[in-house]
Length: 87
Image (cartoon, rainbow, N blue to C red; front, top):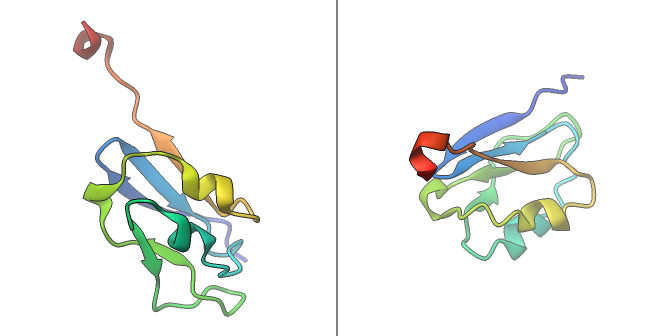
């Protein structure tokens, strides 16, 4: 079983979904305040439909999808700011 995660670029970082860990509960989709995620048409190794990013521009990297996932199958990574940009 593959343990690779799908990665989507969003304006302030990345959203990762590990399809093989996801059990398709849909909490991340249901509770996303910006409706960034939707159910994918594809199936994972367990036979569930994992989430996929459908509106990356709407993501504000709030991390709520991470908090509601009971299986830790989705996480975000904020992009590091350059020190030159912060000045």
